[in-house]
Image 1 (cartoon, rainbow, N blue to C red):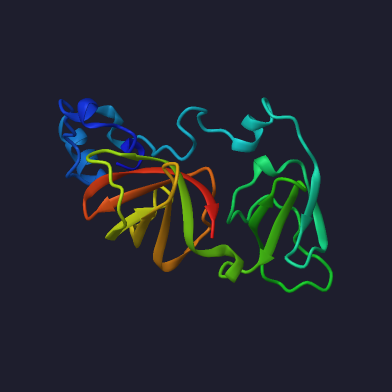
Image 2: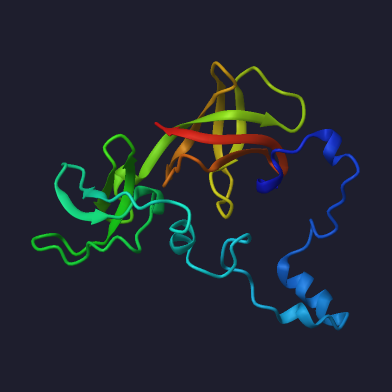
Length: 213
């Protein structure tokens, strides 16, 4: 449902989801019982439309490198990057800044991307406060059912596909923008990803994360 939040009732009215109540292990067992040779096929771990290859390598075919500084929260330059487009909030791997003299042993994580100055901002520790946000702004909100114009409480949201739904309140803003206020701070909120809203098992709709608050 995370990927289907942009559909409407006209598109969904004749759609069936026969695997909707099954776990993947159950589906594999059914396939084995039916002698389907793909029942032991390895799970896909890449991005479906580019196949099993490195995402950065794929992007470099279409995006010119734009080198810039990697800085810490105090503005100190701790490294160089080949383009902030190639990184995401919360990323640890591929920064190339391990083993800095006088730095603590904890690994570095991306906590912000400053587009105007082309700076990649990092901090140390997987639980650093800079990695967490209590609220965010969503643009281009799409409602699968009746659009809402009032504050909505007691719902849940997912800010990435594999995340468990998190309790939140949705507050309407101007121009089809909404502010999501979470009961607990959320790690690695990433502008450009979808925030999808749920009422228990019902997908309400979603939109694109534009800002972290």
